[in-house]
Length: 603
Image 1 (tube, helix red, strand yellow):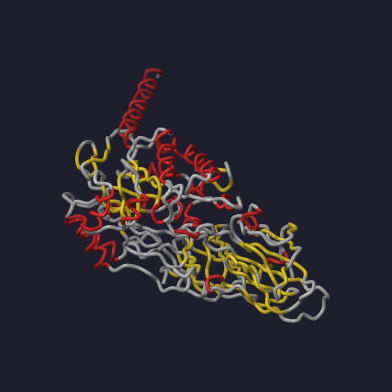
Image 2: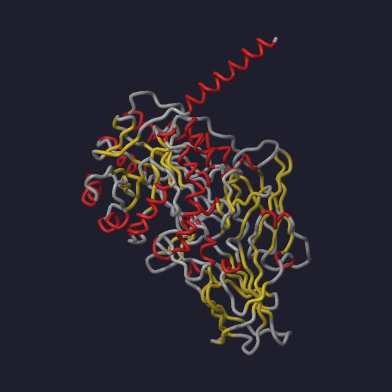
């Protein structure tokens, strides 16, 4: 018996050793002669980008298999620093889709290589471009440069994540073939000392695979954003002229298209953006014909769950927050399904492949559900936290709050009606006088004033300004974008003093602890129960509500807003269960409940 057990143990050890040897097969990857070399053979990177933070971890493998079946040999991913460090030194690299190591392992298990894009800045239509909002609690901080308050935080992040990167470099048996240094830096700044410091920081932590940068194919961007010895990524590039621009700046560089756009992002109040099938297939055909490496940005977008959607500013300074969906009109849609664009690109890829592409994975289950009326549940006004006294309003970041809503309250002394000016609302405010709704102030419309009526009753009326912080700007010059009231409030030119602030991050724990009450005014929670016989992905239609947030079984699906174009929120089937499912809706405007309904499509 002892011999049999010993034999079994040796067999298990041998299997384990073989599996380890297979999983940790080492490769070489280098730059040179304006191309990439894998094991000293020319290698064309054909990559598809997805972001672990935007996709439930249970779906990662399915999405990676979808990417592989479209003819890709590589996956690219952003790592959002602020998704993993919520406060200084408070990390999460383990739970759910924070588990980056599991994502890297899944990429490797599916036989794919990995372009690793860890930031510190990523853009990505993500809140603050991936930088942690706690940086904004420093009043005069400068970002993406050698400000020591910024570099100290970056160094802490790099030292925390670099052992993971090193472990999974292709030279150590992992899938990571390149690491991005900075993202589109030439669109933001020109601090060459910063780029060198960042390069040396990663190198000092033992990262040995090649680095790359990514910038527009424009001379000033390439001069400011590229780095000696790093590959040059172009965002985008699908012509000889664009590749030639990079070689003018870095003649020795290996150049590739680091972001090829099969779709595009969408802001609230816009029509859905996208790109035609003909345009993207034409671009890919040129890249394939000329042996150029490229990365689809994005091949699968996923969802800006919670409060993670970012924002842009237009040329005139107009604030443009992104919608919750990151469908992006990408080849693999928000629910992980193959689109006509996917099929066209897969067919094109097959023409260039010497072997048959892997089969397309079966789509995941999807469901609908009939209209369900929500019921009035609780009022925000009956669930306020402890107030914090302020002489004048300050942004929420100065109160160590980084998402959600914040309420500012004062009593009117002197002027008690007239023109209220808020400098500035970031980003959407509802205004109340003695508990009565007065109106809203919307940054997206360039508003900062509202008329306050004469109030009968109290000698010193109570003024409430409830501010929703939407996405922080994630690109270009205006990224210092604090939330709440950023400067001061005046009434007929008189500065209003002596405020109370109530921080409302709107966490799942807060929603779970709501107390029912009798107050009925804008700022209400509603509740609905979905009784399901089967689970699956669905889209919850919110057309019967105005503006707010939806929680399903404690998961924050993100924002809805009746200005469009998005009226349905994606709900992953893995967040649902057979039987009763709790849906909690917070609406900034409605006091009467509406109905919700489940669909299989975004539009």
